[in-house]
Length: 136
Image 1 (cartoon, rainbow, N blue to C red):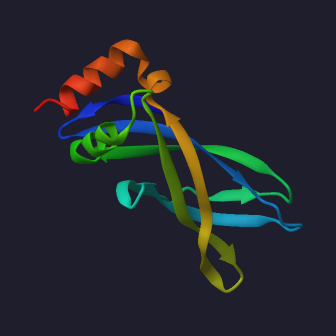
Image 2 (cartoon, rainbow, N blue to C red):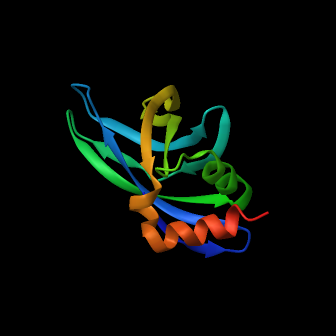
C-alpha cells in the first residue's frame, strides 16, 4: 500500500491485490468489491470490474486504486498507537464467470493486515499527515 496524493477532500492510495485460483479448473473473474475496515469502521470501499482469467493454481497481482475520505483517514490516524501501526481488515466479494452468467462469490476475501504508517508515509509524511488530520 502506498500514498498516491491528494485530490479535493480525499487522499488517494494504491494497493496491489494478490488473487489466487486454488481450484483445479480455470477461473474467470469479472471483478471484485472490497471494503477496508478498522474495527467496525469502514475506511474505504472499492469495486474493480477488471476481468481476470486465472489458470489452475495461478496467482496474479492487480493494482487497485482507493480513494479515502479525509474523515476516514482522520479516524484511522487517530486510532493508531505511537508506533503508527494499525490493524485493517479487507473483506469482499468476487464476481466470476460461469456458463450461466456472472455469479457472486460472497466472502471470497477476508484478511487482516498490520498497516505500518511509518513505513508507508516516511517520517516526514508521518508528521505532515498528523498535522493535517489530527489538528484541533
